[in-house]
Length: 412
Image (cartoon, rainbow, N blue to C red; front, side):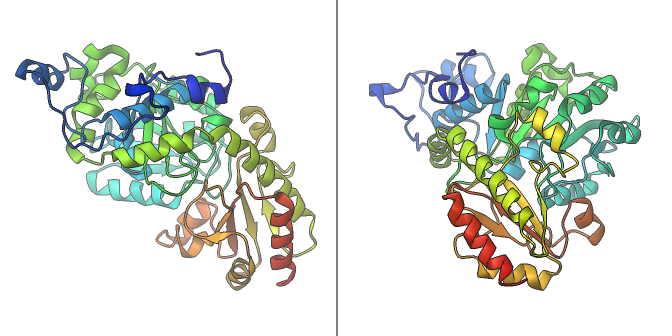
């Protein structure tokens, strides 16, 4: 079903052939799977036949989730992991080795910056662009560069990556372009269709939608031509053609590090995923209206949101995200103390370190998700002492506007 709409593809794009006519893929809560004969199991382990052997490697409930994300992102195959960070680690380390370099956007989630710092112990260095424009990436590429990485919408910087143009830069230099699509989701943009090679989603966020399951997933577009000299680890898997990247990952790092997604969490993701389009439609509309409203207040706050015309990323976001701008808004309040007072005065939002829930969520990034970053790294990531990040939910917008107005003006 390649020519149908987003929500139709979500609900009907994968035929699971569920036993007994179940409308949802069951939870296959089994650590291992029996087989009729030894030959069948041998064929699975030697990649001569499809099947299930051990849930650390794959599971029917998990596979159903992987197939759905593959369809939504327009990819060739996906691998689901225990968390978004596990998915990112697998996506990167499937092709990196000691001595390699990464060129990355600056406005990254704090945990991602910390992961890149951890990779330094393995001899892998990351260079960050100062400005999220294609020429900045090109300027940092050397003969040691092995991939380019960016987020569709930076979290919490809210800078927007020009996926098509950065992909062109990467491919001119024979490099894969890996994109974290967590904040935008495939509802707003499908990076693989714009030239990206691998997409990562922290599916704990908007894909799940209910904050009830930790998970992550990576999707390979299957179009990048891997150079066996630059990426020697992929050489034995060239025989798998477009599936070389996924085949290497499943037969190596993913299987051996064991950060697999549990069947229960895959089931919860499959449930949440069905309403992704509806939720994103409402959350993006709410975020835009809330941002415009807060920007109109004479209350000493500075509003950042790609949907505002004053944003330097507005025109790119309008074109690339099809007139929607995501569901995260940030506020600069003047001081950490005022930011805390505003957060504590809000009645509706939950104070917690997640995004993408049906409920509106707020956090002070500098003291939480970015607390372990250096001051320089915080600024590069768009984190300031007076910043509040708002993950806008599906509440009635007038209620949200009134709650934020009361909290902000009470601290004016």
